[in-house]
Length: 67
Image (tube, rainbow, N blue to C red):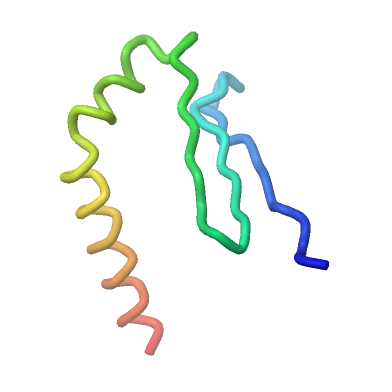
């Protein structure tokens, strides 16, 4: 049997939900609920390429520092 999906809720310091992250053998899914996001979901959609590129660059930098 494949491992059970790993799931967690990402919260702001005040406890409000920012996103839900789900990781399976097929990949990782980040869900940002539109309700209560005050437009953050749309902003992320509009800037997805830049944000993902910045995250990938950060990951690559941190990874190279570990070596």
